[in-house]
Length: 141
Image (cartoon, rainbow, N blue to C red; front, side):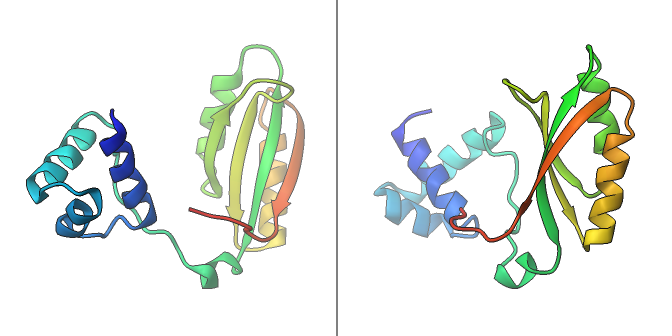
């Protein structure tokens, strides 16, 4: 991946619906070059797909949080798989340092969030959690 690929990815992060002609113009290359670069990034798995980023109106409709999770022993993969079965758990990351896993959680309400957090804490192998509610985005791409 070179600088042109990184610039292309940056443009796509800001607006994945930009036409190839607009991408090419912003990059100073031909449409064919822009299209071929995108296809190569897709084929290599760097671009895994294109999605929708919801606007501000949707941000206030629910509860979002980050949960740090400590796992006993060597059951981290099993705990992560169990969390994948909870639809409110948007993503789970392995990490270094104090916590074994970090989960991004979205729920429709505080009572639903409480139930999800309770379900996570009941997963065999979870020994400790620390959760922070996300209040307002100061910056977002």
